[in-house]
Image 1 (cartoon, rainbow, N blue to C red):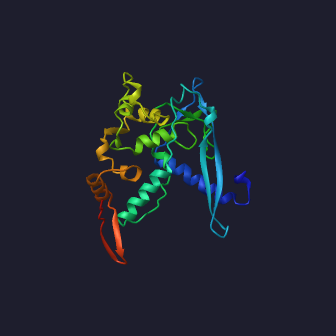
Image 2 (image 1 turned 90 degrees about the vertical axis):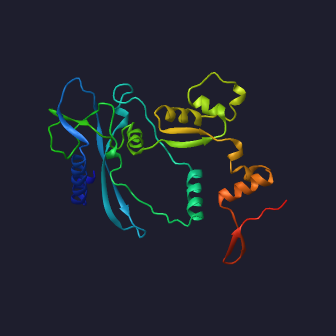
Image 3 (image 1 turned 135 degrees about the vertical axis):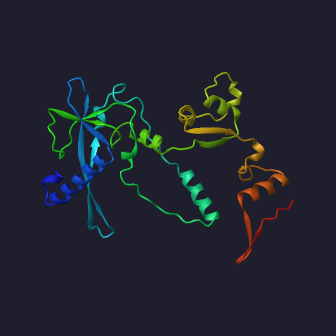
Length: 255
C-alpha cells in the first residue's frame, strides 16, 4: 500500500488535503449508522505523476467509490458518460484558426465534487478520516469519483442554457421529441445517436432547431449547388482565396 511505502508522508499529506477539500465543498455529511442503510464501499487510489524525464513531481491520492457495490433502483437510476467526438474538436480548431483565436488548456480541480446528487447515497467511512465506521457513515451530497451517476451530475451542474442542434430532417426532430406517429420514409439515417438525443431533449439539455436544406452551408463540400448558393455558402464559411503571399481577398466563383 502507498501509505506503508517509503513515500508514505507524501501520500498522507495528499490524502489529508483531499479530505479537507471534500469537507470544504460539503461533499458529505456525517450521520449515525442505521441497519437499513445500504452502504457503498470505497477505496483510495494512488498514482505518481512524472515529467518528461520520468522524475516524480507529484503524489496524487483519490478516494473512489466501488461502483460495483451500487444497486440499480436503490442508489442510482441511470448512468451516463458523455464523451467528446473528434469531429467536434476538429471543428473547434478550424473555427479558432479562422478567427485567429488562441487555445488555452485548463484542468479543473475536483471537478466531480461540484456535481450535486439527486439520489440518497450512504458511503462507508473512508480510511484516514478518523471516524468509527461501526457507529457512523457518510451521506453524500455531491458526486465523487467512481459513482455510476458521477458524469450525469457533472453535466447537470455545468449546463446552463440548452444547447441548440440544427437538423435538416423533420422526421428525426419529431422522433426525438417523442412523436412516433410519423411515416418511416421521413426517418432517414436514424441510428443509435437518436436515443441519446431523445434523452437529452427530455431533460432538457438540448433544443432541436429545424434548418432547411437551403441554409446548410456544408452542402457545397458534398454536392453540386448553384452559383447563388455557392456564393452564399462560401461567404458564410469565411472561405478566402490566397492570391499572393500576404494578399488576401474574397473568393470569386465563376461558372
